Image (cartoon, rainbow, N blue to C red; front, side):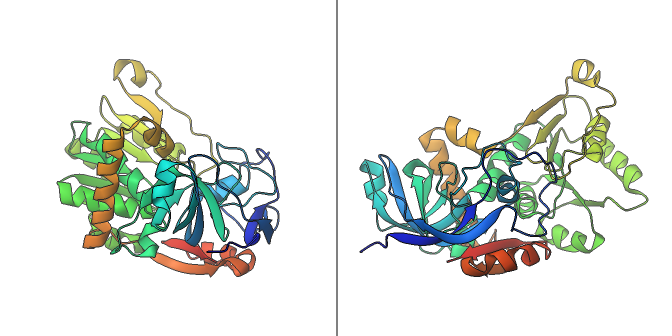
Amino acid sequence: MTLPSSMNALILKGDGFGNTRTGAAIETLEPYLEYGSLPVPKPGPGQVLIKVRMASVNPSDLYFIKGEYGQPRIKGAAAGFEGVGDVVEGKGFYASYLKGKRVAFVGGVNGSGAWADYIVVEAAMCVVVKPAMRDEDAAGHVVNPVTAWTMFDIVKASGSKSFVFTAAFSQLGKLIAGLARDNGYAMIAVIRKESQAAHLRELGAKHVLVQSDPEFTSRLAALLKSEKPRVLLDAVANQLSADIFTAMPARARWVVYGKLDTEAPALKEPGQLIFMNKKIEGYWLMNWFRKASIIEKLKTLRAVQNRFISGAWSTEVVATVKLSEAMRELPEALKIGDGKIMIVP
């Protein structure tokens, strides 16, 4: 196929890191992005050029465009980390093998982003998508589903058949709820709204606690005593998270994989880290990709795709926004909540 020389994209206005810590909330994209034209990027050795079909919007994307993520922005580059598309060019043995295939990918860290018509990605960060898998599932099937699968491995290795999960009505929380149910684990899900509780139970969460419930503290204490969870999977990292961790039994691990709250928590009993052998640690999927063997990666990714194809998992898309309309429509779509937003060319 003949490739165009230019493409449409949502282009980063900022460079490096920002000076604010306002969280994932976005009222307008104007300070951070502009819709415009960029040259179609060219793949280097070990890279592929992908014609994007659909790109997902994750909290990490929102932190990134504001300069609040752990990686610096590149001014003038396209935003967006994750999506699905068709490989149209490749440089290198594996990259050439991928040509013509539909792949899920993670990129956006080298100056080429997914919120565009085309993206250049390391071939190693691409996953060939089975024909039976929907684009809606494939577009977000690396970051959240693989995170869910690999974080659940942490739960299984903990020696406890239960765990606590905050911000549990996120797409990631919904995926882990199904894994917990299917593997006989008790998920103690912490959510903000009572209206979310019934659906989360349907998806597999055994216990659902609503933060605004006057009985929240006593119900949590009872569950921590009866279920004895040793892992807290936490995307919020606020004072409530710290208090839950403090109330958990010995050898508990507080695994932080996000910072949805800008509040700085205080650990009221740091002596627990010494005398109760508790641990606080971070989780970033990129580290798993760097450390896992090829066999482990293939096994995990195959299992993830099979869960979507079988219907055990499904991506709940609440809005699909055209790239050309995203400056206006994406902030409004983000207010819907309770599901994924996709961007399409």
